Length: 610
Image 1: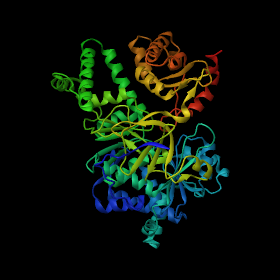
Image 2: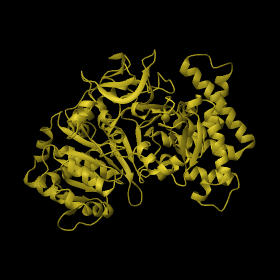
Image 3: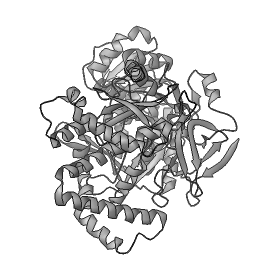
């Protein structure tokens, strides 16, 4: 039974919704053929293509897929990092009438085989020879897979074609069947499957989320309806396109027509921001936490007058932004002080990010209110979005005109959010999936009735209609004394308090007290060690240094001061390695895979209770 229902802000209206993703592309090319569409790193410099050039190449690739026998809703996989060719491949699948199966490139061969076999994928775009070899090692487990298209690499004249060879086949197909791609596009219906995204499960096999064309066209229309982006914006896109967050951003681009700079190399983000000078960027909270920790740690190392000026500026900035958010007076002279703080400190921070950022968007996991306030104090409007793969990524988002740090804002236009009697967040709207592929029972479990989807998150709605998440329903842990703990909230607080932390896992289920595993950020740890004159130690040895442990203990003590007695961390272990997507402890969207971490480090956890 729902307790309260909230909808989008009253002045927002759902934009026009196209028939399919392919129709969105055709309409975009027709409307703004000569406007810049994408810019991306090429051999020696960044290359830019307009919508007409992009659309023409997509048509040729789509014709190549038709020549390979791809037809309505046939699955075509993409096993590739975020790059321009990923988008070309995806849009070619859309124009051919097929459906994209997204696969994160670090996925192990056995899991790749399961995903491609379960989805009945027939053709796969593979990034390079490494991915081709991965597919070849499990070829016998994927009976439906007929061809592989390699983006960087050589074909074998049989199973593997190059991207150029696919284009050659496409041109030949168009010469013989000139209207075939347009015919395939026009036949697509809103309820046809557009994308299969397999969620990263902590136990068992991943589930294939069936997202329809109407899900993605809804996302584009809803983002347009919010009115915060336009065709004049420039997006910097680095997020994994195999994840729904990245895919949603592509839908927004098709709807609005802005330019997108694409480069999935995380280590190039800072340099690229200065080069591309985007007006907005989306990312997981970990990116913003790292920027926050890095800048604060740099100021700590500077010390002296520079640090005092920085601390003063941040204090002024916080009072200034709190006054704007709450509507309460910030204090006498704060406006004048803020202008000085901006000139001395904040303008330099913004310049490091290109100097033109209008919005930063955080999604995929919980964002600390402390971090969000800090960015906004610096004149970098950081908005928090919320959604799941099952809701096409974007379900709600804070608006610049209705900020409240620590909330996920209002639903998107056309979406409703309700709180069930047990506190679970329910969602109803255009972004909600059709169901889990080949899993009717698990699909029924998350649809309690009347069109509502059960998110698995616990939350509440404030008096202004903004939604706040308090924890994951399945992540609540219970001590042997019967006390419940919300671990993700504690973990998020710790990462803000500890500038060298990468991840924390709070463990207490059926235990008599709470303990924690702490992973340290290699770059931040190296900087901290240099500041403390600790030299000659590599990362694994450095993590076990007594000075490092003492500093982490200080952060734990500070954390514990704000927790209930049964929530406090009594013991902790610092890992000799970071948690990564590659080792299976993090999802592609940088969320902790709790069960996987506990299984991996079971002996360490048990040791804290022996």
